[in-house]
Structure formats: structure tokens, C-alpha cells
Amino acid sequence: MKEKIKIITDSTCDIPKEIVEKYDVEVIPQIINVDGQSYLDGVEITLPTLLEKMEESNEFPKTGQINPHRFVEIYEGYLKEGYKIVAIHMSSKMSGTYQSALVAKDLLETEDVFIIDSQAVCAALGVLVLKAAILRDKGLTAKEIYDETLNTVDKVKSITCFQSLTNLIKGGRLSKTAGAIGSFLGIKLLLTIKDGEMTVMEKIRGNKKVQRSILEYLEKYDLDEEYPVIVIESDFKEENASIYDSSKEFLNNKNAKVYECPPGCSVGVHSGNNVFAIFFIEK
Image 1 (tube, rainbow, N blue to C red):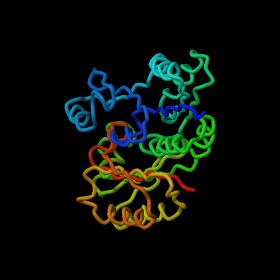
Image 2: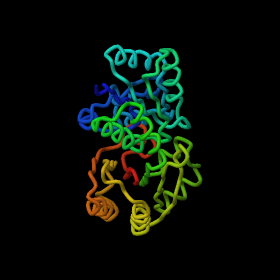
Image 3: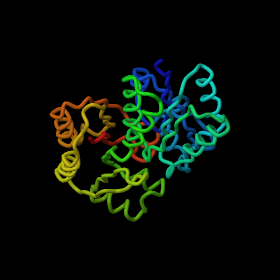
Image 4: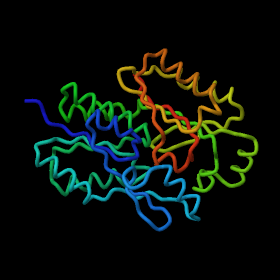
């Protein structure tokens, strides 16, 4: 008999609500702490509201991990209904959420929960989650999905372009001096996820160089068109049409299934409202 399987992740995956519903994924919201208040990510607060609050606050927002008891509550509900669970969470190097999930599994004393450290965040986590959901719909068992998804972790690729350095400076990810020089010179940052953490690939001045670097990155990998590509974009393409258009043309020529959406709080808190990113799986 075919297993009942639930794919579970956290809200740092930045998958749009309609896609979450289409692929039948359970998304548990992270906690966003700003100006002395706590909010459920994507439920009680979205990026536009968060950015407004950041303008009024002297403190940079912080994220709070999902605690083990919340995981126990959710896992237990599905287990009682006869489900096996494949849970995929943001990088353990960026949050304690993965560790909380492991604690919850131990508390439940179950072998029907399979937990994966994605070594990713934002839609890099998202593309991994969507692959797991597709494998489930193909009829794979929970253990097979776990094994295949785990083997895909190192095949998830991402490139992100930050137009503004302001929030990186506020959040302490970039020094004020470097940020001031970068902003004055019109430098854009290209970032990727490496070894479970966000890292700066290049600091580039000029749209033509940014466009060339993004295309070179995309061309370097053999994109697996069987699984969706997620493009994050917000207030970027109007001022940077050549970068956006050339990247989208490349993906169209690869016959990639592309989901485009705005950033969530996890990346938007650092990028602000001006960002462009591509997340995909290589063969």
C-alpha cells in the first residue's frame, strides 16, 4: 500500500502560498522579533510590513528558531493520522531549527519522521522541498525521498544580487566603511550559499559585469529541468532590465519550469526591497 507522506519545512523556504498549496507542503512559520515584538513569519508579518517597522526601529530584526514543542505538536498530529514525515529545514549553521526538529523526533520516539538539514535558506531550501514533494507524488517511500533529497543537498545552486547594501550594514553583515564605499561606487553584491552559509561571491560595479557574472554562473551548471527553478525578484527589473531579461531568457531556453515570487522575510531583511535571485538544482 502506498505510504501517506507529509513534506514539512519552515517559512525561510520562501515558497509562495499558492505553490505550497499546489504541492501540499506544510510550512511552519519562524519567529521574527522586531522592536520588542514577536511575529509569525508569513502569518502575522510579511516583508513590506517588516521593512516599515525597520524604518521606525533602532534595532535590527532577529529571527527565533521553532522550538521542539511546536514540532512535537505538528509531527504528532500527522503521525496519528498515519502519515510518515519528511521534514526539510534551513541550514543548521544559520539557525537551531534543525536541532529542534531532531529533539522533537527523539521526544516522540518514532522512526516515521525523517529530518534533513538542507544546508540552505530562502528558495534554495524551497527548490529542495519542491523536489521532495515531486518525489512523493511519484510514489517513492518516505525513506527513498529522504535518501534522494539528502543526496541533492550539494546539487542546489543559487545566485543572489543585492542592489542595496543598506540592510547588510545595519545587520552587521557588512562594515559601515565597506558599505559606504560600495554604495558610493554603485557596487552590487553577488551572493551564494556555500557550506550552509550565505557568502559573497563577487562585488561588482556596472550592470554589464553583473549580467555577465550571473550568466556565467548559470552556464557553469547542467540545470535539472525536471524540477522547478525559483526566481526571487522585487523592485529590481525596472532599473536592471538587462540583468533580469538575459537571465530569464537563459532559463526559458533551458525549458525550465520557473516560479517567480517576491522575497520573504528571511532574505528580504538583508536585501531590502530590491533583490534578484535564482535558485535551481543541477543534474
